[in-house]
Length: 431
Ligand code: CMC
Image (cartoon, rainbow, N blue to C red; front, side):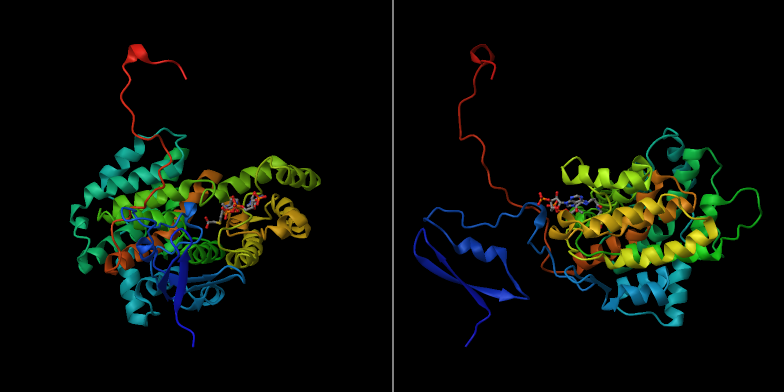
């Protein structure tokens, strides 16, 4: 008879322990009973970077990285990208089910009617230098929003949670667009609630003197699909930051600023920006073999390749590659595409990349699309942040509703000095 337990023998003491296995995992706290002596703290698990540690139960996103599967609430990402819209997908992510027509209308209306910013927000965006990185300005602006909505501190009140979701999802595109307009010295373009979520974002980015902006339907749709692909990705670095900061019971604006800051880094959401910088630096397809040689020699990483979870082609990258062609029909072909295709071709045939299971990830092609739409590379992580806001918030609510969740506070393995006496300055020697 098999039991759902793990038997562990501690060879220091010869004692055996039986530890329950639930949902394919053991509870790390159960290790604490394993002690070498009476006063022993008990065994811990050591896992820098959380390579093999589940920090929560979740019912939102499922990934099987070995075969390249991504699903939101059970629905395959390919079907959502094909059939759904970003706002419908976000409803699904928050509620667990696809909305009826009336539910979707209500959801969309509420988000689209929270797009305006308090006028003071423009003033502090104005205070940033023209060349401030848009992610720095975005992160600071999101954090500042918490001071405008002190009611958001009622984090356990479902009505308040709902309100902050509408506010944040409605306002993030406005902040992002204002950040962009500030950088290029254009007056801010206000939201137009008649337009779709992405149509309105394009309006706030690109509206000039026309009375009403009409987004190109192909670009509007492409951006919508990109937002669907980026909406959630289970316990990635920024979502973990959202849950970590949120676990101290701070307000969602402060927690979301922390998540956006985590996204900023080049190993996470900043990778799409680094891909474009890398492609521009390579310059032409004939330089690709030398670049790959350099990567293999440890001179840098092939940005947009590799993933902590996917050890196969990132399913999002496949969808993006398809929509890139549609976008390029409108905008003209991005000249860097050929370099990207050549990099992918050579890398996928190369033993270094095959052995390490390094495939293109979501960021490899997304930047090419954003650039063709006229956005500067520094805005790419900002677009990622707009789309991921829904996932961060849904995961934050899931955390608040989970009775097993606590203040995030990892342990450490202390390897520093043992206790010693303070040395007065006149008796110290340079190391
Ligand atoms: N180019 C070259 N070598 C790589 C790359 C890469 N992009 N990624 C991983 N490796 C190598 C790495 O050097 C190591 O080799 P070795 O075993 O010889 O030391 C091996 O593959 C394993 O790498 P790792 O850093 O231990 O793996 P990880 O799971 O910690 O890293 C990653 C995942 C995404 C940080 C990494 O693949 C990477 O830096 N990729 C480039 C940045 C990037 O595209 N990030 C976007 C991720 S997708 C968007 C998102 O969800 O954030």
